[in-house]
Image 1 (spheres, rainbow, N blue to C red):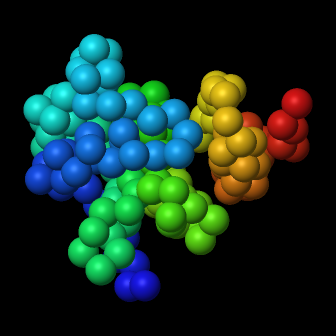
Image 2: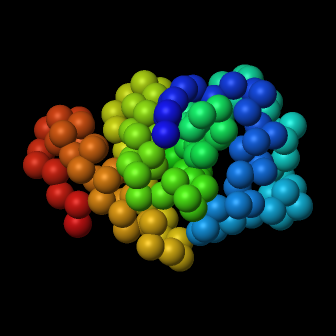
Length: 147
């Protein structure tokens, strides 16, 4: 296993749309994504113009996961991994890289967590809380409290 992490480029959009339909949790087919306005073209344009920055992970040249966010809100929009690459720390690395990139766009860190169905939510929420705890404490000048 030779993992390479890198920022997403517009040429990744086709693979990202395809991979989204092959995830174990919250999979969306190409047509389901199109119904909510997400197409290869919109994804490609978002990467190209910087409105949808993200990171991808490749294993021996094959994309196995990605994470994208929205710079205007600082939110992670999607974290997706192929099932065979789950539980290897890849999602954690992608999430960290994307969050680090998104924090550059914000005057202070923010953490928003919607609760979708599935076990990945709790794990990702804990990772995000641990990672942002020092920044949240510094930004608010008061002790961090997840409650």
